[in-house]
Amino acid sequence: MKSPLRPRRPVGAVFWRALWREPRRLAALGFWSVLEAAPAFLIGYAIARAIEDGFARAEPVTGLAWLAALGAAWLVGAVAARQVVLGVAAVAEPFRDDLLTHVVEGTLNRGTSRDSAAVARATLQVELARDAFAAVVTTVRGFAFTVAGVVLGLATLAPQALALVLPPFAAGLGLFLASLPALARRQRAFLLADERLADEMTATAGGLRDIEACGLREPVAERLDRQVRAQAAAARALARVTAARTAALAVGGWLPVVLVLAGTPRLLDGGLGPGVIAGTLAYVTQSLAPALGGLVQGLGVSGIRLAATLGRIAASAPPAAPPAAPPPPRIRPSACDVRLSAVTFAYGPHSAPVVDRLDLTIPEGDHLAVVGPSGAGKSTLAALISGMLRPGAGEALVGGVPADRLDPAVRVLIPQEAYVFRGTLMENLTALGTQDPQGTCTDLAGRLDGAVTAVGARELVDELGGYGARLDPAALSAGQRQLIALVRAYLTPAPLVILDEATCHLDPAAEAHAESAFARRGGTLVVVAHRLTSALRARRILLMDGTRVTIGTHDELIRTSPLYADLAGHWHPEPVS
Image (cartoon, rainbow, N blue to C red; front, side):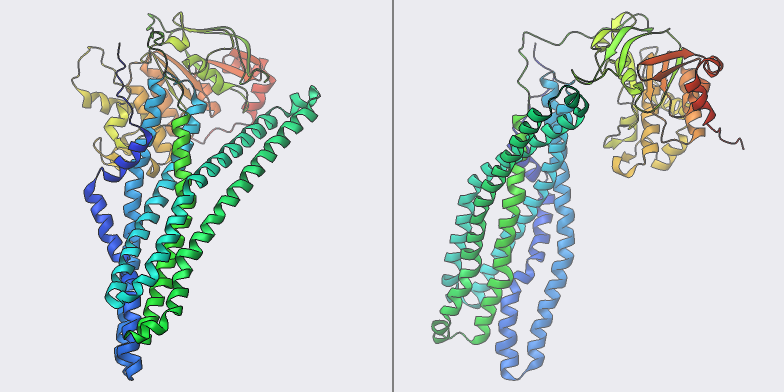
């Protein structure tokens, strides 16, 4: 059976598609680039005319007029430069979105959705690639338009000087481009060595207690020392290759100056004036050499980083799963009670368990609050119940079905950092489906309005401009994103709802409104409490303290648990207005 997911494009195709997807946007970028390059075209000609037609003839007004024209060109270039930055950003963001889609589709196509660490690493690589992509587009675009402006200006001012300027410039450019493959290899080797060292140091820092307890200090130190030496060797090799950049700048940026100065007598004999010589030198020193320097720096750093990052993204994709081994089917149980039997979970083979031999039963329709100190395992428990994590030992069942085999429509987990994507508000609210007991698609607006009112998000919907408003996640506050995610969860038909500090960015009144709505909604509700008031609204409370757990009502725990009594003693309820 073929996967319903569409085949992925190669990573390189994502690069070119981002550039050419919107020709009108690219044309606008080209227009502003022409204006930005105006000073590069005018600088030599304006200086030459200011000297030859103005100051050399004792006509300062003419000379100043040419310099004023050059100043006006710089002002126009400054305005255009701002528009160029915005245009490059408009191209870079779709590139990021396409690349992120490429990564996510690859994960789904390969059936590795549980490897959250790999996805997180790939997402970080995507952000690095986006920044490098923007830098490369900016650099190459600026270089191309500047060189075109200089060549056109020199051809207008002093065609004879082109023979002195262009050959060494082309040689320097060719030398730099020829060094790029070696530079890319050394840069990639350095990145890999740096990543290996970071991974080794992270693993060592996390296991210091075990290392000391087992007497492994010396072998671990030796292993770290080898990684440090490997990174240092990669850095030295990279530094040796980058010396080619200095040679390229010397040949392409400054050798033309020497040749123009050396050829000045011949140029003067050919009828060119001193002002034209000065203008030619201005073209080289103020436009051509800086453009080459920017290209060397941009491609030599950002370009190599982009190539290495795209290579890392392509290489980090896990091998395709064999067609004969499809993922196990998802199961929709007839009931929604939760039962954990001797569940143990640790985040590493040598780490202490966060949850240890836990037995817990949550009847269908129950409302359970989970409280405890930070790091007690509350979020881990939420992930185990939802099936996001699989127990190391024991079993976590929902309606008799292993939690990791549940049909996604059965449960919904809202974490502390709520997810909102670019799109309309309605698309965000209905992303997980909507509860429709009759199985029809009618009255969607009524169900939306009901959920928004129940959760307490009506003011937010009005503030954003209604359900058709397009959302920019970065423009929303953490509390606004949480409200959107809460309405999304409320709308789903899922009979099991897990709120993992999903109201922590709301004020106490808004939190109470939202949690009360989920309690009235029906089904099984598990709330990892951010405030103790969440526990007071629950039917039962699970107190977690490391691997020790206690369950009961608020009054029972006050009497029997010193820890809970201490937590309650430090809680001050909000005054009722």
